Amino acid sequence: MHQAYGLASSKPLVQRELLRWMFVVLEIGHAIIELRREQAILPIHPAYAEYQPWRIALRVMGRALVRLFIQPDAVNLQRCLSAVDQAIKRVQDADEPFASHFDTSVLRRVKSYLHFIRTSLLDPQSPLAVYGVERTASGVAHAA
Image 1 (cartoon, rainbow, N blue to C red):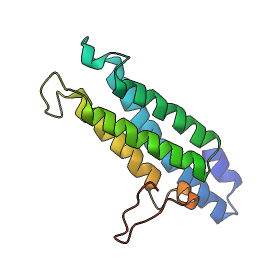
Image 2 (spheres, helix red, strand yellow; image 1 turned 60 degrees about the vertical axis):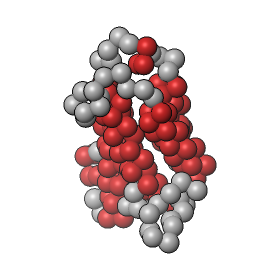
Image 3 (cartoon, rainbow, N blue to C red; image 1 turned 135 degrees about the vertical axis):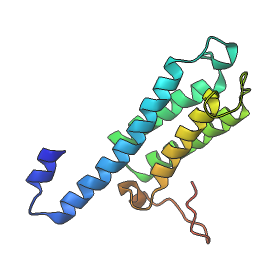
């Protein structure tokens, strides 16, 4: 990033765009790392098995994110938002076998990271904002 920023030293608009991309990649990347960490330390229990709908939805979302960052456009952003929304729904629908306190609930933490990813995708300051996610009258962005 430092090299790219330095090469664009006389181009403030390019620097701004680089920073915007850096932040969205860092934000979403951090959430993905945390999701992977959570999955790596899951207890051995059927509710956390690879075949659970919420685990499948996370993998689908991951592939959608890859497509979005390889080819950022409105279609891939919408696909990604739909995948994140589906993952959130699947996590909400999953049965939590242990206490539902944030510190002891894997699913609550996973849902938190998913909401963070969704918020990052919808950020009006993000470079992804140019791909036209509609806004409601109240100003809250929603996946169209």
